[in-house]
Image (cartoon, rainbow, N blue to C red; front, top):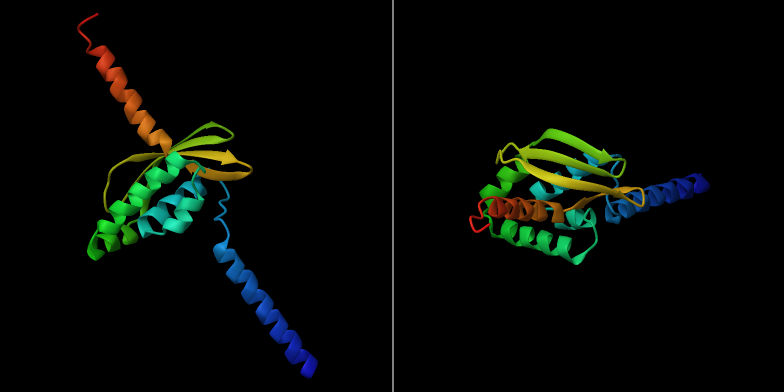
Length: 151
């Protein structure tokens, strides 16, 4: 009987420690769409640690994400709750190749379409926020060149 109690205690502690270790690990996504959903959900929920672990690891991505953190922190509790309760609407998924996908999405609170660039690196799908800003910049530059009357 004593051995049974010890074995049960050991199994309980083992399972508890495995469960706790999983909470601190980087989020794993099964595919590109799952990674997009996990990242968007983390952003809507204000789960900064989880979101940051899903980014391409460079200073530009971290800087963009920190700006999001600051703006989210300034929101009042009611608005944060609306984002947290919002559902994710995926409008289009465009795979470029086996390691790059673009996902156009919105949320039910703010129905603004946004685009995420997902990249598969070392077997894991991660988010590259630089695409959003470079895309706007490129579009802006093309518009300026088209309206240039000095040529």
